[in-house]
Image 1 (cartoon, rainbow, N blue to C red):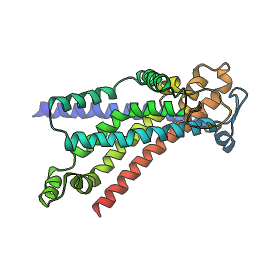
Image 2 (spheres, one colour):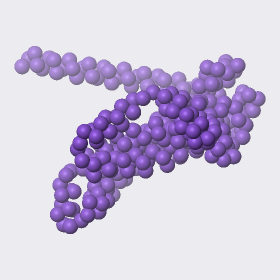
Image 3 (cartoon, rainbow, N blue to C red):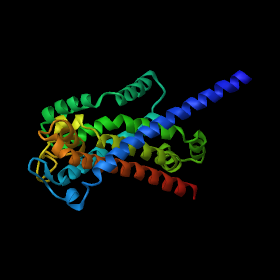
Image 4 (spheres, rainbow, N blue to C red):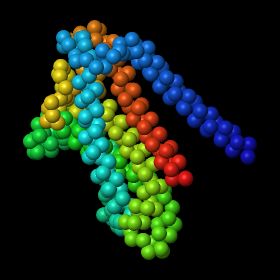
Length: 284
């Protein structure tokens, strides 16, 4: 018993050390970005066009481009991902084929983002002849986010007790009525949370949009979904590694990083708030 208690205490101590180290690293990184980027943030920085090769002016086109791409990603990933999860969990039989499909979806979640970028170039830019544009980039990110959405949505559906389905079916409800009234209201909070977390990850990706439509310097807003665009992650990448005057634009790079982190944090906050409110409504 004593050895077991010592082993348990050592295990908990190791976990605490790991958690503390991860939190400290995160705090140090965030503190560095905030302290070096907060001085750049201003209304002009957020609402004006870039000038002089992005050494002056603001990042409005990058903010708008990131927003547009994220919206297209959501429009593609959310309905397809949730619909696929509902079919796999509620309608599909447990066969070798469905198990293979589930395994393939989970494997796709771990595929490097640059592979999705190359696939997007082949499918959307070349085969569908959309060109390098907002739509191509958004659809590429949508495909990348789809496995995350399916997996998170299916796990949320699995957490709904089987008795909820059986009770509705026993009262004469159809399969879809059972899903719509007795399953989805309890699964939606988890489905939305996983989906928004996937979208926040997509908003910070560079490789997929690098090949499908992102440009470093465009001193104007996208005219349509078939125009090239600026995006915060790609803009930050170039400002930090490829710019001809890196030391001069370093404060702008820190400001861009702070804006991007704030956008991702806001999306995660939306997921938390939506989950809380939906759970509250469900309990009422």
